[in-house]
Structure formats: C-alpha cells, structure tokens
Image 1: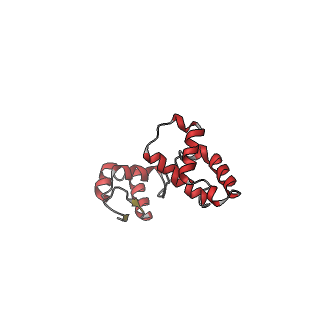
Image 2: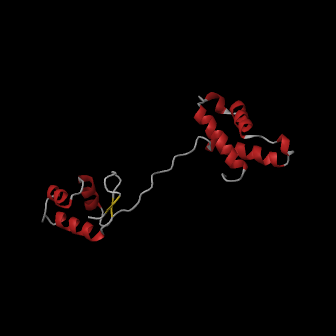
Image 3: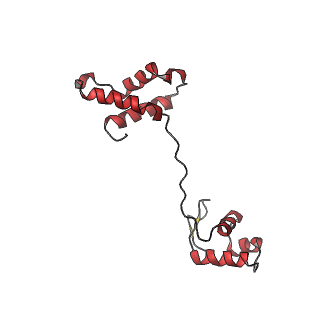
Length: 133
C-alpha cells in the first residue's frame, strides 16, 4: 500500500498499479467490495472513489469563500488613491479607513466583532502597501 500521511484521515492513495488492480478485481466480480477493503486494508470510501474514477482524482481544492471586505474594496481603493496626493500626515490609517467605512456605508447596519474590525484593519494595511488589490 502506498499512502501519504497514513493515519490522519487525509490520506491520498497514490499507487496507480494497485488502484487499477483493485478496481479491475472488484468490477469483474473476482472479489467483493467488502473483501477488497479487508484484503487491501482500505476504507470503504476509498474503494468507492477507486470504482468511480479510472485513476486517482488527485488534489481537489475547495471553493474559495468571498471576503467580507470584497463589497468595500472599491471604496477603500478610492480612499487610498486620494491619499496618495495628500500630505503624508493627512493620510488615512487602517483604523480611520475602518471607521469611515463603518460610518459612511452599510457597515453601520452590520454587527461588528473584534475579528471583523481586525479583518478590515489588516486588509486596509495590505491595500495601502499594494499587496492586496
């Protein structure tokens, strides 16, 4: 058997020859599914995946979630763009950008937690140095 990170529940079956052998033996009726799981020491879900795919499906990335900040990125970018022409002492800090968004936009209708505030501050900092956006 060829597993990576065996025992963590996140195993990836990588032996292509054995994959094909198990698949062939089960699909031709030479061995039952239960017997295959026992003989090859694989989980039922792994066997089901083997029967569904002719070769290992590989890494599948989960769908990325949207950020709470996404609807406000144009406003933040506009603030930062305007700040470039202002004196450096007059520019917005991340905290000021957050407060301005909270006061001027629909943020005032949302419930704020420290995590949300920290998220906006961090994202504003990333935008200000050009890492984000």
